[in-house]
Image (cartoon, rainbow, N blue to C red; front, side, top):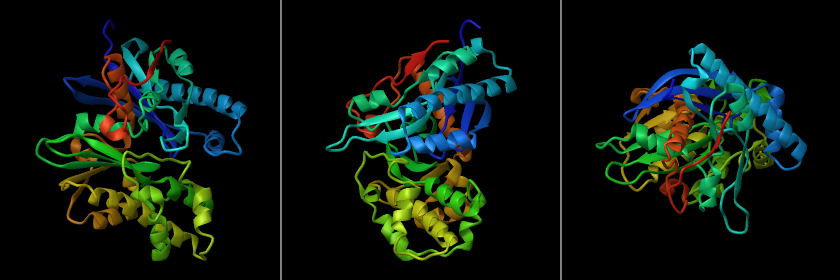
Length: 370
């Protein structure tokens, strides 16, 4: 095909559960989703990633080995999707690979700002025979931004409405929001933990990698004192632009918060559900303009307890899945990185300075040829 039109987005987030792959086209600004695939991350590789996210167990050797292994797994995810949808390499304009974040240090006084995603894009390009665009975050950080969140620019393109003040709430490992007010600029920021703490606590105490539908947490009782302590975390009230990750909110941090408590594991899980819901709702309810509609994407939408508490905390605001806007909540982020690859190939900016705090818009990412 002389003019390839298909883009593939690859995404692995803070939850480190799987690599999401989505194939799509963009015609007249409209996204058409062609197919999807979820590639599980083996437990041993997941543990390597967790080790790299925290000082102590990390090493240059582990970083390089994991970078290569993840490159192979990302390539496998893309190839599985291409086979399932009968997509040939020559039909693919580019693969947009987010990679796997192993360390993120946003700009703040007295520290060096940096972000690191791994999953060797050279390997992905060679194995698939496709051009790959990767390393999306560091250009924004070079311009003084946080390099995160990046999906609001995609949300703006796909989900804006001239008549309604909309919020897109992504509940992945970390939660973030995109504000799409009618008649003014889009903005957004990370709000705090999403599934990260819920999954970590559930894995440690139930043996399951996540709390299916929130059923285990539903058996526990909220501890209001502990919730108040969680909500007092400086990040929750911090002004935007702001971003966070596993470096700040992790199992070790959680266990330090529990030193003065003697609670059942399921009570702590119930309190963590409330923490995720309340911190997200506080960010939305604290916006300057009125909010008409909230659309949720990310894995958190499948936690019934979390969604029920979020609905109560948001009050009369209409709460929906992004499915209502035409894109299933599971695939929004993977599609965002397909879109970012499209922006790069067409020499168009991929960041929003009003979100990240960068000094200007920029074409994001670097291109790797097969």
